Image (tube, each protein chain N blue to C red):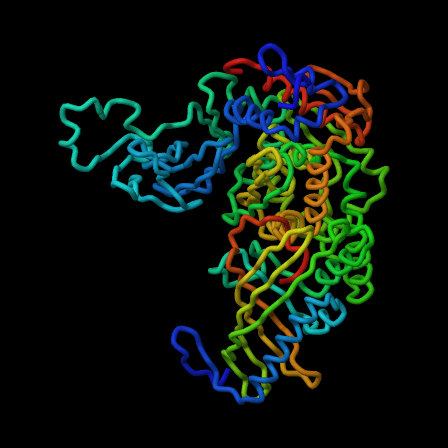
Length: 175
Length: 445
């Protein structure tokens, strides 16, 4: 990708204010969609061959063929949504509720011809369920396709701070 | 303890807690019962520590707990494995705080730099002259890291017992050893190798609720119906949209929604010492090219007759009571670490079959993801039910837990009890028979 320049240890692309604004709005919208549990809109955020990936270790460089906390394509995401919406999804009664904050949005690379981006950001999530609140913090890394309909996620990597666990109850869907 | 219900002259009356077809709620909810379980069961029985492939090189170590005792499994220079209490004999500090790592040629305490060899023997103490004319003696066992009373390795699986006496590991496993053999035999080279990602999940429920659930053939359709039906729907969509049949991994979760009758057709077997086996369901003998390639490799290593014998073994799930849930045909293992009466840690691992092609490993990996990862849709509903069980059992809304289904109908031969129908509550009754023996035994078993 062109336009990348050094940002210390991690690359930073010099992008226009408009691009920075567009990508921030996209990430905020994704967070809202999760918090509002808008599952059709969630799926529409991803390209047809996308993966949502939460590795089991910060050192992991591949999702395919590795032990992951999440490694889901469209069909697995649909399965998860089908479960959540099913009246017999017992652990969704009561359902969990989340609040996401996304920040520290840095475009790491921009493809000059296509406008595709690699973007990293930080998140903080509070989750409430059955009288208990828990928190997840970490970083996102989005590979975004620039399409006529706006950005679409090709790959979303999610590294949570407490990746080694132990996990006090499961993650019922994406963070 | 809750009054005279469980008390006799000696303070504990197992008959008040366990009957052949029902048990008292205090087995799950009473803190003193739990403390006795730690002493009488987890500090005496053989407890799974880890797999030797977790520590391939000299100085590699892994830490865990046996009951309440923190231990270190370490690889010695002479290739032997030692299981030691994770405690410096000087002032008591733990020697390894990490879950795994490499300690080099010895352990060094971070507090005063006492050093120990990899078998736990003291190697060096700083300012040794200070001990002249004191009662301290380097030959005293109290100067060394303490080894567990007994340690045995069976086909790479490391178990320890904190009791100096008792049956050997193989005798204790008895007929249930077939589950460990099944996992290893499925490897063309006869050995499995751990994949170093351990998922750790906390269950807000008693450890026995987890073990009782594992072979309960009535719960899957009810607990996991939502996931099974969602997966069945997506399987159909995938076929319609892509023209390709869905990958085998979808079957792992869609099968949870199979008709109730099919669960009833399984066999549940109660082995001595509380070990249990669920037979059937996941024979996993499709005839796709990956399976055929694997079958051919198995035949090359074992010969056709032995290979067929191995691949025909029909074990879905093995419980090594009280510490392990093993799914041998998919190389999954969950180790049970009780924390308190109402909290349990599980350490979840999967394994590679040495010498098997990569697609066969992918089956284990897919199952590890779908059923055993922190994002599992399956255990999401199990853990929810376990927690509700625990909260209900802590209430005074009733004293008993019912295990009556098909009670008295088990077919018993040579100490091994087989269910008349997969729905039988034989695994719960079998586990509690062992529980009763452990809990009432005085001294070593």
